[in-house]
Structures are given as structure tokens and as C-alpha cells.
Image 1 (spheres, rainbow, N blue to C red):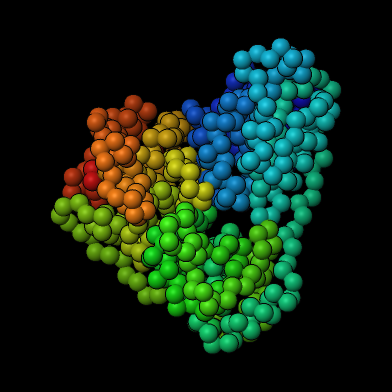
Image 2: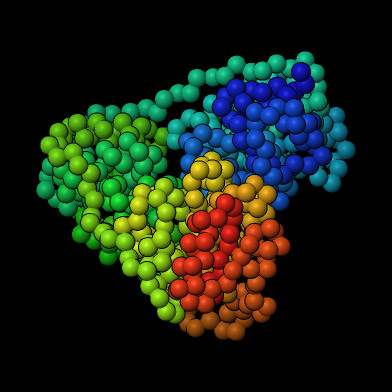
Length: 514
């Protein structure tokens, strides 16, 4: 058995069975090993940012890592933006990065680079395998690192001669350490806060936003009157009819301050205290009122579900029904396109058990409110602020959950960063309906310019925010990558296209000019 085969067989033994790839010459022996090991599914992306973003989406929906296969330092570098988002999402992910044969490095050929340094900002663990016999052991350690709570990125660099060398074996799979429970003092203090009668919010993150964690949080909120919140940069939230109501903290500073001003206590479960994405002259970066007391029930990497269940036990709530605001689905609107109307259409038609991938920061801000009364579904957001995540994230979610419909909400500007994701959707036959809000602007940047109090942008500044001249044609872009697309000009047309997309057996795209 050569090194490459021992690597892949070790990953499969450790339940890593999906590889999002964009390989090159230095990874050919790994490609050959993948060819011989059908237990590992291989999904090709035409850009490394698609592979890394897809691995993120896969991990969010399965709770386990996929691996990426990337070509040397430049290939890894191309994937860094969505690895940044994945690091912020705290998901498990393993990067396999090829390296020149060890004896070839001293020639300093054109693709030679410092791969470990490139990997370090987004990787919790980075290692270059030194020998054929060590490679599978390194792979087993990468799996354990990635799966250590709350979820981490491991990058394993594989020199070509280590990959093709003979005499390897499958590595021993390591035990995954359980997430530690918060100490009892933290639980008791949170219980005392909730008994105090002061207006309290609980800010949830990670697996506290779905499954048993969300159920326990709902019981606590129902028994105490606490408000459940999640950060704006959310990883995954379970929502819809029958699930506890959790409000997303607003992105805009003034809106978030208004949203949180009533709370005198804030309990954090795996989340950081909410602050503005950016600093603004003369404005505080903090969203909570100065008199608000913040307490951490569970730090990042601790057992969020266990912490909430322990808090629930400490409170001994008598009413265990999850809190759920009564919200009906909006009526299906007609007429000219408006942002409120588009949100109402999605709220009226969103299928049960669907997955919504949301990177529509400007045009889609009404979507979550309009879908509160929709059937149960999951919502995935942009966790790191690096745009171009929607299409790849949708690919990964659809690969992970092939029986579920994925709705991908993106803008034209951010979509152009990783539009190659459409090709992967077509190739894999993924059930993704992509909605492109074509405002032909980096609209959020126009807003940020006005918000900083530096006057009205001139022609040169506006030229850096305007992505028209020529206008992007998303219907033709999609068609060129094998995805049927349509452009709509009314709410009725949008509803029809959305229904057809949800009923299709593969990917579709809807362009909405704004």
C-alpha cells in the first residue's frame, strides 16, 4: 500500500467519506488512490473557494468533516476566503494539500511556496507529513483535531514522494474527546439571573441552535420569559413552525442597539457578546446597553447542549412546551417586484425540511421575518463576512442532504466570486434553487460609505460600487454552466419560477432584477 492509499483509507475509517477537490500534478497519486477507493465520494469544484465553501456547508449539516484536496500553496490560497468563513463557523474540516517531492523542493520551481504559513491563519492544526509510514498517523490526528469541539480546521500537507512511497498502513483511529461541561458555578449563576426577574436574553450559537440544544433553550425561555437570540453571523439555525422562536441580532448597528436596549442581562452559550462588524467614528462598537450584565454559560468548545440541559434542570421548569410565536405564512402576493413582496413569496412557498443558504445582506433582510411561519427548515448564514460563500455552501449542504431541497439566496456581486459553484450543482445533479438578487451594485458598500459621515460618494467612488456597464446576465451565465435559468419581472413570475425550481430534480436559477 502506498502513502496516498493509506491516507484515503484512514480518512474513510475515520468516517470522512466526502472529498471536495481541485487537484493538480502534486496530488496525482492521491487522485489515483481516490480512483481505487469508492467509499470516498469525490466532488469536483472549478475553483478552490468552491471546494472549501462546500466542505463548510457539508459539515454544518452533518456535524462531521469532509476533506478538500488542493494544489500546493496557490491552490490553498485560492480557498482561504471560505476557509476563513469555515473557521468562524467552527466546523470540522480537513484540508489535504499536495507538496513537491521532498528532494525536488530545493530547485525552487515556480509553484514552490510556504504552504504551512499560508495555512496557519485558518487552521487550528497544520502538519507536513515526513514519511510514508507517518502519513496515516498524521491523517488520524487530523481527523481527531477537526472533530474536537466546537469543530476545527486541520491542514495536512502531503509531499509527492510521501504519497507515492510504498510500505504504508491504515492509521489507528483516535478517540474524539467529548466537549467539556461548563462548571456548576456558571450554571448556577445563569439560573440565578433567570430567577431575578430582570429582562434577560440568551444568545445561542453552534448546536444550541438546533436539535436537543434548541429544545432545551425553548423550555428555558418558556419557563422564564427570557428572549432567545442568535448572532447575525449564524452557522446553522433550525426554525419554522413548531420550533422555539430565536431572533437574529441585526447587522446594522442602530437596529441592533434598539433590539437589545431592553435587556439588563445577557447569557452567552458558545457565542461572543454582540458587537458591530466595523468601527464607526463617534459610535460605540457594543450593541448591549452599558448597564447590561453579560455572563458566559458555555465558552466556545464546551458542551452547549449539556449546559442548557443542566440549566433547564436547575430551573425545574414546569412547562416544557417550547416557546413559539404564532405566525401564519404570508399570502402569496402579486404585482411589481418589491423586497417585501419577494420575501413574502419565499415565506409562502418554502418547502418543509428545506435548507436556506442566505448571503443576501441587502436585498434579503426581510426573508427571516417572512419565513417564521413556514414549515420547519434550517437556515445557514455567512459566518466570517467574506463574500462568495452562498453557492459553495449550498453545494455542500445539498451533497450532505440529498433528500432535502436547498434554497440559495445570493446577490449578483457576491455570487460572481464563486459562480463556478453552479457548474458543480449541474454536474452532481443537486437540488438547489438559486435566487440571484441583481441590483448591479455592491449595495452594502454604498450604505457603509454614507454611514461613515464622509459626504456623498463621487463618480470615482461610485464606480467602485457599481457592477453594471456591462450588466451581468445570470440566465446566460447559468446556462453556460448547465443550470437552467429564468429572469422574472413580477412577483407572480417569481412565485411560478420558485415553485418550478422546488419541483425540479436538479439545480435551477432565478435572476431577480432590482
